[in-house]
Length: 126
Image (spheres, rainbow, N blue to C red):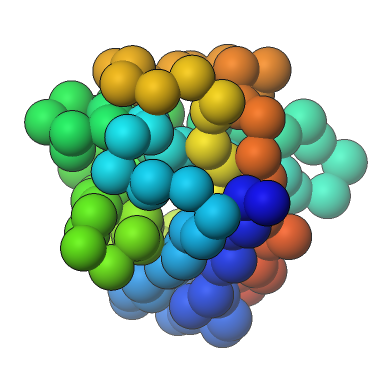
């Protein structure tokens, strides 16, 4: 059974940083692309960042490019989202997700992801 567990959310200051982690279990983590999504109240869930199974390819939403970094540690079965220069509009519930298909680059659509974490809340204070 695949499980994804996010951590690291909480209250961050505008201009500050937070680091999210997503621990994976139940399958060979290193074989799968991973993604981070977020959903703010009243808004649709959107892709924040995605990373290929090898970690060699990444993709970001325009709104976070240059501020957020996705990375993975396959030895630790964990994907990270380093969030710098936080803005109020970054406040949302953040989800990590993984697809069912192995050895893919990355996916931008939430419909390509089959497994989801429970989410972690990020709040940004001004």
